Picture 1 (tube, rainbow, N blue to C red):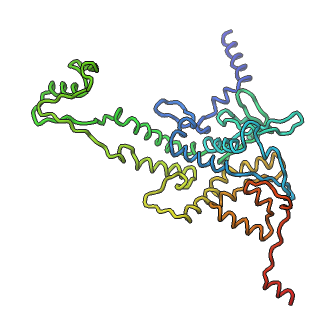
Picture 2 (cartoon, helix red, strand yellow):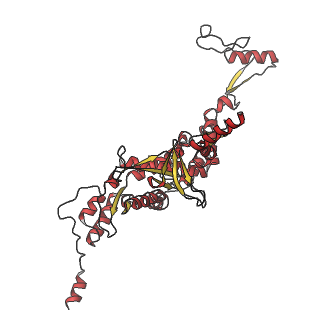
Length: 397
């Protein structure tokens, strides 16, 4: 009888609870970094993000995407004023919404956007879910994602957009930088903890008591206790008995502190190496990480080329999935405007605008939109390119 009850309860639990699938799901694919000392999994936002270099890398990504604007056009190339593109979230600004997507992809390799719809089916907003709370539901035959489990509730695939940073062949979830380099980040965490507790846990003495006379074991123990403000029984001496903590030495004893160089005490070389490793991991230029390899001399031209490479080969890996998801959902062409980041100074930006205006492939209002300015009356007409004087003479003759 007991066996039948056990089997029945087990079947009911498996039928109505998503926990078996969650238990089978390895958290190695959800950006968690294993804490090998405690043998538990820790949340990356509370562990890896506490490493200064990782926080800086995430901050650069979020700050970069927050400066960008989105433009939408129909299939004929005409601008479309779409409400969801202007404000994809009802509770967050567009910069915050984009920042959450980038953080999800950078820390987990995945971003899940829930489409909240009106009764008529119109999409009202795209809610960003915490990736670690979402479990894709796969078709057993095809392996395709047919839905998503979150907090015990199943959502159909048509209501959720799944964006990935890097999805390996045959894998359901994406692979983010943190999962790809857990050993490196674990070492950075261990170095930080070791550096913070160097004098307390490593056995490194703060100083040495030396004497030019022969000391017995009892004398050495007594003087060590006295130096550490302990009585003969090893108990702490109260401040009432020795408020100024005066040390009394005898038998030629002398105290010599063991001093470390600041570079050794702070592990500066190791920290510099970790910063450069994190910069490589996230694809962030060293100049944006406020770090520089030893012996490297940066020039303005070098920094500008680094920033262009950062936009093309790092930032676009986060932006392109967002563009494709919005374009497919809204059936229009949605693109980020990255021109402002590609030209790092105002003079270069204005010179590029002048070329676009004089050659007629941008209008005044399009340029003003790039600069975040309101349109002007009559600013939608493109200028005709100026014909060089030599060409005019050849034509008239």
